[in-house]
Image 1 (tube, rainbow, N blue to C red):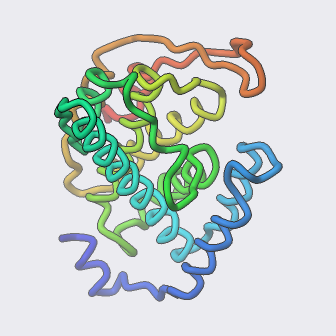
Image 2: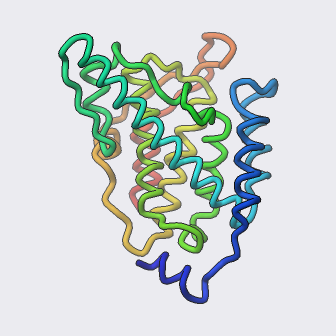
Length: 237
């Protein structure tokens, strides 16, 4: 694997696990839904904190942890629905769309209530931006293959929440989706052998559905986003 050869060879970098843990604790304590500043300002501040290779490692860990916890949450929800109703739901990490299409009204969108406390429009959005901006350096600190899979997974959860999970599409939600798409494209472009695009991305790329984007503080429409067009522009390279 190219990333492992880089770590074992001349591309080796010096990482500080103590600094990484301190960054994670600081991000959990200072930012998120409880912070009294706008999400866009939080993203700007967090992005500045996640500098250097340790910041990149932390950003990758946030994305992966959020994807892992969201998957565990959906598995638990599916188990509870089966316990109560006898209805079996399949939870596939590579494609959440069938799950949400079948049972969206019965599901809770997991990204707002994860155990880690990272908020999708604050820490997650910033971490995704850092991963994308530093994509050429990823293979110096981690394996980019599982990481890009987790980026796509969070993107799948985000878009499925819009379509089937009653998640409001405001400017912060649209910014998250835009960053996820851009970062996925940047990571794929930096990889020697990028993987195939996952099924939910291919499904959305075949469409031109436009979603209204609202102001976070009121129902006023302030713009629109076409996920299929953005994906074709940034992922078909």
